[in-house]
Length: 305
Image (cartoon, rainbow, N blue to C red; front, side):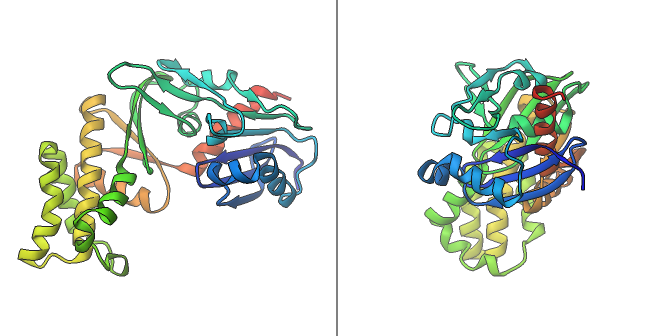
């Protein structure tokens, strides 16, 4: 087996992912858990990291590069933000050093958009972005990174010119559980997704975003008057939210922009279906591959040997 060269960590709000990497950026071992920032802030960041390093038998002197919420104000060590517009490579030179550790532990900064009318921040997605596009990307594109708070980033010739966060995932959870529509979706988890209802909702919200709150209510009224199933009601809510998100993102990026989707699992399938329903061309990059690529680029910049 190849010798380990560094450790890469993606430390989210609720999740922890660690990879032991060799000098060619191949995975030698990995460890995952639910010990995200929220948990680690109580149990200790150093302790959580040490337990996972032990699981993968990391040598004691091996450096660690971290992205995500470990660098938040409520995290381990605040890593700050790099202001946009900026080059993708700028995050590589602004790492925060974790003090008091026997090994070299660094945390990557996030990105901040300090526009008075559209202030925005991201932390963790900037590393996915770097890994998905590379520091020397060319052309203009919109990069979609779905999640609880989806990010759409506008990039031109390797420079981040702006980005927008959409509370799509959080709103889906809130609407499905804490509004009258909770009755409409009861039991939907036990049935397959209604693809026709999802596609129809995507198109309706994209075409008429100003009608959003009315479109949400049709999940309830359609069930009362036309026998809409719970699965269809859930698909209608999901499709309306994603359609709204895409409408807003395309309005900001410009029609005809090249779209790169950075996603995995269920969200990848939903967003690919949404883009196809709207006849939008796109290419997909696996989210795990992207974040490891960004962390690898950082490791090479910090520890070139």
